[in-house]
Figure 1: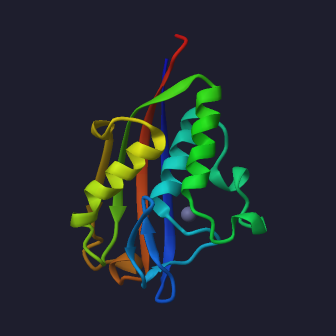
Figure 2 (figure 1 turned 45 degrees about the horizontal axis):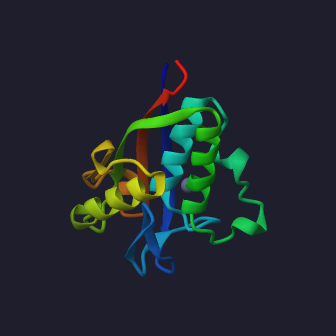
Length: 160
Ligand code: ZN
């Protein structure tokens, strides 16, 4: 059996925060505001997997009220969700994501993000697609006040 899931996330930018996307340090400034490291790429992957499993969303599993997760590396969340997925006998067929970001240009970081995500999830790089686009100067993302990400995942059940 196959199941599909979607994840969407947007965070505000702050000059005081590091920008971390897909577990990769992109910049020491102009990062994203959030309780954890605000890694929207990993947050959307978590939500897409949880959606495919019909197991709620990332906020239900890792509350932003919990002091334990303050400035936490989001890869911790993804590793825990991978365990939930495996407990339910599912594995990842492929992941496809689009990061919507005005600045900086992410071209040179896409392969690093792909490599890191495939390592965390223990899947082939060929099954992780990382795309980036801008908002063409439109809206909050276009004005460089926020970065968003959309992710789709396909899971396969090992039993049937
Ligand atoms: Zn988030």
